[in-house]
Length: 384
Image (cartoon, rainbow, N blue to C red; front, side, top):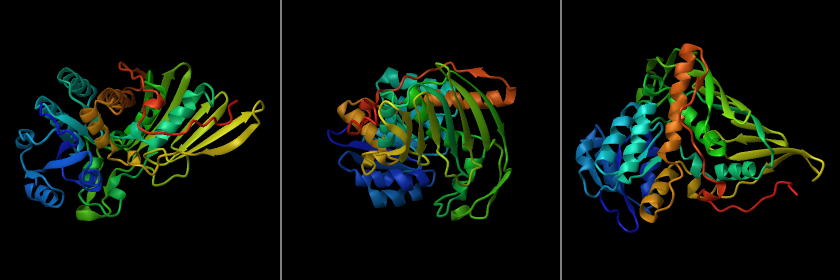
C-alpha cells in the first residue's frame, strides 16, 4: 500500500465523464490543501489527457497501468454503474483506497465482498452519495436524537426525477442511465436510503411494486441530443418498508417525476412532524409541534448552519476520504451502510417480481449526530 503524502491525498480518477467534470476534478483544484490529482484514466486516453492538461497528473487509457502508479494513493471510480464492482475490487486488491460514485456495486454479494477486502487490508472505501457528511443531515439527526417529535411512527419519502437525460448542458451521453445495470432505482434511491438509514438505522423488511411507465426516452442535450432510448429497466418504483419498533414507511423512486414542491421526506412522530426539502440533500427543514407545555404551536423553519461550507458539496466524499487516510478520522460514509442500501435495492427487484414481502439480512447502526463533520449550535426547538 502506498504511503500518502503528509498533507495531501494523491488521487487517480477513472472515468472522465460528467461526474468527474462537474464535481471531482474541480474539487482537486479547489481543495488542493487536502487533495492532489496525480492521474486520470479513461477509455478515451485523449480525453483523459485534456483533463490532466487542465488539472495536472498523468493521463492513462489503461486502468491497470494507473493502479501500478506509485503516485496514486486512492482511486475515484466515476465510471458507469456496471463497471463499479470490478474497478473497486481491483483497486482494493492493488492496495489503493477508493472513492466510488453510487452505487458502490451492482449487487449485495459484491458489496459485502468489497467491505471484507477493504477491512482485511486496512483500506478505506468512501461512498457517494455524501448525505452523511452534509450539514442538513447533521441537523436532522440532531432534532430526531433529541426526541423533538417523539417516537417516529410513519415515514414518507420521495426520491424521483426524470433522469439525467432530461437535463440541459449534458457533457456526455446519458442514455446508459435508462438501461440495465443502471436505472432510476439505483441512481436515485441511494440519496433517500442513506438519509433514512443514517437517521434511524437499518430497514428490517420491505414489499415493492415496479413498472416501466415511460418505455422510450429522448436525450435532451449534449452529444446524444435527440437520441431515442428504449428503457429496459423499471423507472417507477413504490416501496413499503418496516424499520422495526412499529415504524413503517413508504418510498417512491425512479425517473418519472418532472418536478414537485412536496417534501422529499416526512417524519411523523408522537409529538410532532418534520418535513425535509432539497432534492438530493437536506436544504430546508420544517418542524411542526403542538405542545401546550412549552407554548410551541404550528410550523417553524429550522436553521441549518454550515450550508456555505465545503461539506455541503457533492465531492465532500473526497474530503472524508482524505481525513480518514491522512488523519485517521472515522469514515462516516463507508461501505457497510452502502451495502445495506444495495441489499434494499436488490430486494425491491425481487419483491416486485415475486409479489412477496422480503426480510433484510444486513443491518446498519448510524453514528451519532455529533460525529458528523460540522459544528452547529445546540438548538432546543421549543423543548423545556
